[in-house]
Length: 101
Image 1 (cartoon, rainbow, N blue to C red):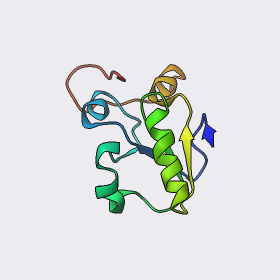
Image 2: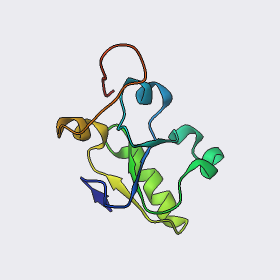
Image 3: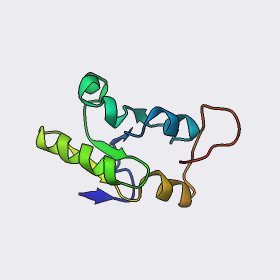
Image 4: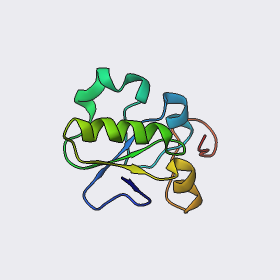
């Protein structure tokens, strides 16, 4: 299932890679890169999850995996590109203005 908003009570889980995260992310998101996902399952919060990546492909795979493991997870449709286009907050950890890559 894909959503365009983070459902109330869900944690936003960003599965983009480190360079993408540093360039700009949602302030309340938890970061677990897809490339490290299986080795960092303990870092994935309990409870409902809204999974996001750049445009929705990687997050759809992670959300499907989580659902297959019995977790409550949805894919954020359009990813961080749609997030930023909708005017939602984005913060950057690196120098310069936030850029969603």
